[in-house]
Length: 280
Image 1 (spheres, rainbow, N blue to C red):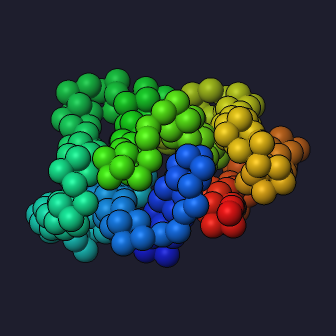
Image 2 (tube, helix red, strand yellow; image 1 turned 180 degrees about the vertical axis):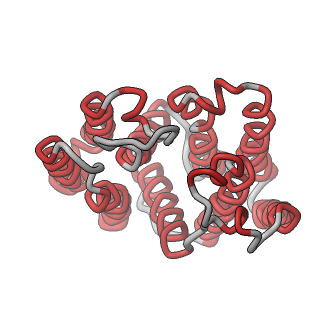
């Protein structure tokens, strides 16, 4: 279920966009370093860890709705997944020990929060079954990975943390949440399917999906507007959510066009990375 070409590309572009933007916002030229690749590898490993965790956490749901999942079919076992998670944790700690104690603590905090969700969902049926509440509780693990990247930069003295860091993390959150809502927004939903449109209705879910993309564009304007055309380059990606919304609302059937949502995520991060590389 962990497709390397998707998750590794996402982790790579996310870290490069976040680190590059954070450094250039201080007025310093940026280029990837050895520490950058440690952060990239750590985030990709963390995404693998969370994917392994989700397979176990969602096992009962997958038995009914996704019977072809490897854990359901027995192609892999819970014991094997847990062994893999232990190995990933050890690798992440080893990599970040070369950066700083703060980096180790930050990556372990993100992984630890993910583990706590297993217990929380077992104790609270509401958190497990109510889609919007589940998102509110589970999404912070993504924020913590962003904090890891930004915080490890600050701990290394590469940047000085300020209010723009919070806005940059908000930008990344809006990009991710646009895709998260897009993939679970549809005019139809099977009984029991975990869709945001089932809880909100297709139109309100589409409005939120579009709103997150607009929020990402707004953050970019505040952060990078003074840089002129180069600073606003990532905003050009906003055309994809606009086209996706138009197609979804006009069709009145089917789901949100995922190529547009996927293109927005990868295109925005790539544009932010290009901006950071090209700035003098």
